[in-house]
Amino acid sequence: MERISVVGSGFGALTAVQNLREARRNLAITVVSPKPEFVYYPGLIWVPCGLRTGDDLRIDLRPFFRRMGVTHRAADATGLSDDGRVLRTSDGDIENDGLIIASGGRFIKKLPGIEHAITPCEGIAAAERIRDRLQELDGGTVAMGFSGNPKEPSSMRGGPIFEFLFGLDRQLRKEGRRERFRIVFFTPAERPGNRLGPKAVGSLLGEMERVGIETHLGHKLKAFEADRVITEGGEIPADLIVFMPGMTGNTWFDQTSLPRSPGGLIQADAHCRVPGLERVYVVGDSGSFPGPDWMPKQAHMADLQAKAAAKNLASELAGREADATFDVELLCIVDATDNGMVVWRTEKRNWVLPRSIVFHWLKRLFEWWYLRQYR
Picture: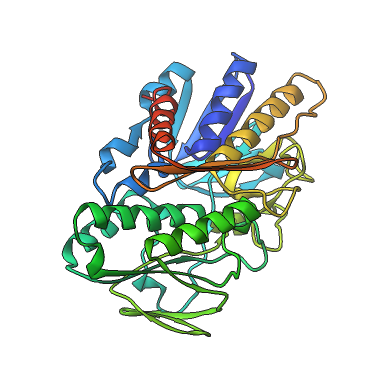
């Protein structure tokens, strides 16, 4: 029986497991992650306003693993040896006949004073910190922003910040407190959200202006302090700082011979293969893939890559040509807790659908549909 190791238990990893099991019933699949649980990160935007709690977003994967016939190893990946055939972990070595790396990325935390900022996509605890701090404040300034990896422009996650921004505006209005708060959006980019497409940038900035969210754009970030954001274009006093840094590769990659991109991610080809290593694949935030400069780092893209990687690995094990590729597609609903804007971008199309309550409920319906497969 061929042995497959999957590193991670996020979107890409779980999609890879499902597609591997569908392709070959007799695989011995081992998933390596610290806990047998899945956190639905898109729902973090609803934690500050109380639409979701941590328990709503934290899914116990043990029933899913039993249905899939998967062994879970509660451990951290620490390295590779034997050209990828041995995965080194904090719980010992695991031999494999095929490997899919889907362990996500790591936020770059090099700016001085970054400990004063909350990075919301670090998980449930971070979103709860934002919620709790907002409850403590009777007024003041909330500064929210994002930046990228200068050596890997696509390795960033700015979309959730737009959702936290608009969600905060709507939350404070519903609470009758909006007039006591100043909300400021900051980023070094002059055209933030450009990966969503030109139409989306205009729509986002126009909506910010309409609801009174101030912008501080195009200025390099220098540092954070407990009560301010410092940029080359001036300072932003702040009672709460929410910031999404650019992303790079996991620290355990440094203990391997995996080929790396300039930005520190694992180099991949159009089939999600890691060049120079046999039957080793990477998906999602861990990898650097060929494609347009707007290729997103989002769950939908990780799922598309995971399907291709699983199909190719199964083909290799069966002695067939591994020629599956993935579509590059950005699809998201920029939610504001009671309405949403749809953005869809492919290499041929870029659609932006204006805000509607329908899209908010569509996003909630998708959450239910997506999570039911793991419950």
